[in-house]
Length: 314
Ligand SMILES: Nc1ncnc2c1ncn2[C@@H]1O[C@H](COP(=O)(O)OP(=O)(O)OP(=O)(O)O)[C@@H](O)[C@H]1O
Ligand SMILES: [Mg+2]
Image (cartoon, rainbow, N blue to C red):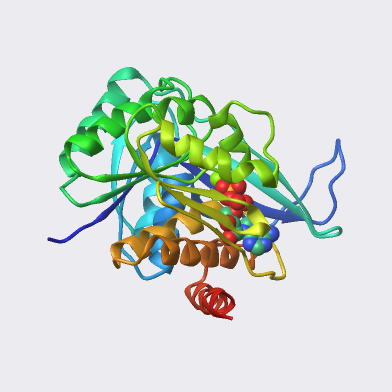
């Protein structure tokens, strides 16, 4: 049976980047021509999968000329996509680099309001496109108009279709989703704190909290990403810390999504959970080695993975 990866993005974005020599108020700032990148959690996972040599079906809500532009960008990148139309226009964010200081200013806007019929159509399209054995990866926040329990509805569809559901989100949407069956969750420390109802988590509290969470929820694998410290892998009978290699860090944008992409690639190849998180950490760290919105590069990820394996066996 051919298993496929489907990614889901509710709040996609076009990341527009320009540079300018100096930023000051009340004057016309002459910027360079913009470059455009596709972004938003699930879309980033699809882009990272492509870089790692894996195909996926990228499903997202798109509206207006910006929605069409986003479709063109992903088409050019050779990513299979299904869009569900919305009346609101897909958002675009702006990143401005001041070349005199090399500092980047990032301006983000909320997504368009999504109407009930629109997100209901998305759920229908999602159900039609899932087959038993597939992997469904939902990543990112929910845009205005979509109820907090949206990922619960997604989890129910995944369960009925016998599809493994991987979720990377935050806030209330994450808390609600964990009331239902989720195959794998990838919170960072802040998101795990939200899930556990605490304000912060010390190194000593991490393992017991992860174990307690798994006991109380229908989740097979919990991967807590720890930024430069790597990740904690926790299942009902396994707990393991996978350290991240130290690299010259340029930008951490997309580290989490690259990590998720690496883990799904490993799952598809039938690797163990330990190997899955080792490759995920390698891909997350690989993403930090490049500027801006660039995600993980396969060569870097493979080299870092070998390094991690070597450390383990040392
Ligand atoms: N400074 C760093 N040095 C090395 N590796 C890093 C660094 N930051 C992130 N990583 C790698 O990327 C993975 C995911 O990073 P992180 O824990 O920051 O996720 P996140 O908070 O979900 O990120 P995002 O902002 O992309 O959502 C880490 O497990 C690690 O492997
Ligand atoms: Mg994240």
